[in-house]
Amino acid sequence: MSKQTRSNRNKTKNKKSTGKRVLSILLLLVLLLTAAGGYTVWKVWSDLQSTTDEMYEDVSDRDEHTARQTKPVDVNKGEDPFSVLLLGIDSDGETVEHGRSDTMMLVTVNPNSNKTSILSIPRDTYTEIIGRGTKDKINHAHAFGKASMAMDSVQNLLDVPVDYYLSVNMESMQQFVDAVGGITVVPPLSFSQEQYQFVEGEPTHMDGSKALAYTRMRKKDPNGDYGRQFRQRQIIEGAMKSVASLDSIMNYQSILSTMGNTMKTNMSFEEMQDLFSNYRGAAKTIEQNQLSGNGTMLNGVYYEIIPDQELARVRNDLNNELEL
Image (cartoon, rainbow, N blue to C red):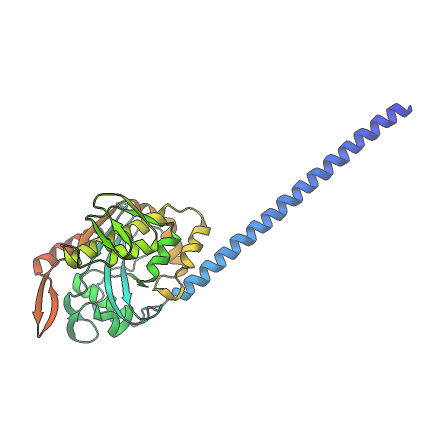
């Protein structure tokens, strides 16, 4: 065999060896990246579950006599409409364990019509506080008996099931809006609040601080507290649409990491997974509704009295949305 032939074979052999080494290195890198990716997903998932476990607070002490006889909601298949009571708690510090719910909204989500509705409930609504046997402002229910009493009282007032609740310290809404990357709303009137200016009809992108200021103004609004409730619904709507548009689990981690002690809910981790997976389409169409009444002084205390006709209107709307 000639030296030239042997040399050519050696070169070919070396090329094959080099090719094998490159392929081995690439496979090793793929394996490492896959392992690292798997660890990252596991870590994020673990953090998500830890956060939601911290947020979880059951409502097993609810008054069974107030519940309507309907089948329990099942969000696993993404077919059942459901309701969530949103409570903005006026409390000292960051906790939401106690305090009055100065913001109350009932959100209904229907995956069949792909629609979400947000109903504002005036905080001064005069109604029965279930579990105390007295009538008072509905926002006192949370102060008396936390989420369970608030859910029971709203359920009794509106005569529809209240499946879940989410309570939040209003200060933490600022962090939540920042976590979803801010929101854009169109102010219904021009006004200034703190260091911010808002112009009627002009789409305005807001970070958390600006959004909080936007919802706090009341005295300059010709519609008073109803105007404030409308702006609160705008913020909730904007936040829901922002969450629905997120695809990465990493984004959910940044959102949930803002919650912890500042939010409480009776949604389990698995139910949150189902909601994110099965109901996000319903957040694309959001309708706003308002329970309205008349201001009245009773024994020197201001209350909002809801007429029977108004209650019938809202109950009918909710029954249709929840397919009851």
